[in-house]
Structures are given as C-alpha cells and as structure tokens.
Length: 152
Image (cartoon, rainbow, N blue to C red; front, side, top):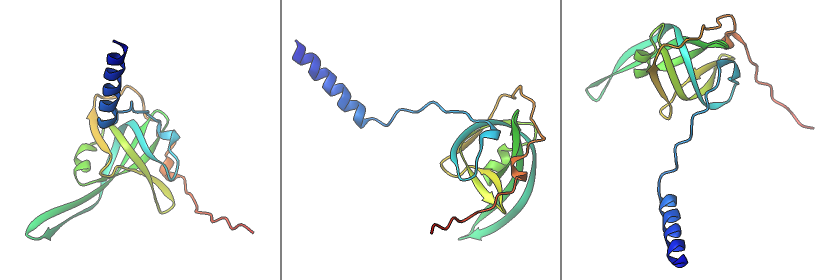
C-alpha cells in the first residue's frame, strides 16, 4: 500500500514540473520606491493628465499604422512620475482614471526617470482609488547623471 502512495505522489510531482509555473502574487510598490534602472514594478496610480507628444501614421505595405506617444503624469499618495504611453496604452490613460500598471520599467530620458510598459507588461483600468495624489514629489523632475567609475 505504501508503494502505491509513493507512486501517486511521484506522479503528482512529475505532473507539477510539466505544468506552467504558478502565478506569483503581485507585489505592489509606491511611486516613491521607484529607482533608475529597475523593472518589474506593479502599482496602482491615478492619471493626472496626458499630453500627446507624437502622433503620426505611416503606410506599411498598404496598411496604415498609427504611432502615438503620450506623456502622462501619474501618481499615488507618495508622489508622481511621468509615464510614457504608446499606441493602445494612450486610450487607457485618461485623466482622472485609476489604473493598475503591471511589470513596468524605468526608462531614463534626458537624465530623468520615466515609467513605461513594454510588451511584457499590462495596463488595466480599475475602480477609482481612494487616495489623494501627492503632487509635490515629482520623481521625473529629479535629474540623474551617469557617473563612470574608473578603478586604478
């Protein structure tokens, strides 16, 4: 009887190793926790405003492809940061809406931080948040300088 139990347990663990890895619970971070050169951030933020910085259409083999980029000021109760929304993301980033941003990364643009979501991330509109955005702590206004360290 014990050999049957071991056999079933062995079969179960073999099935688990073939299965997709289990989804991890997201770890939500605050805007003030964001640092240059980091990625994999999940956060809940309010969209304060959105400004279109690029909108152009180009013909690719008789299909018109729109290329749109908006800079959106987003924030939570710890601070704000500029988010670069591309193409379909622009439609989700409406002022006064609350969004969950998953797997976001920090890009550097002219020495300041921008939050962005590439094809591995996701943006979803959610219920309006109850927090008040702390708008006097804009992380995109902090200028960073790349310093190269030379060892002797």
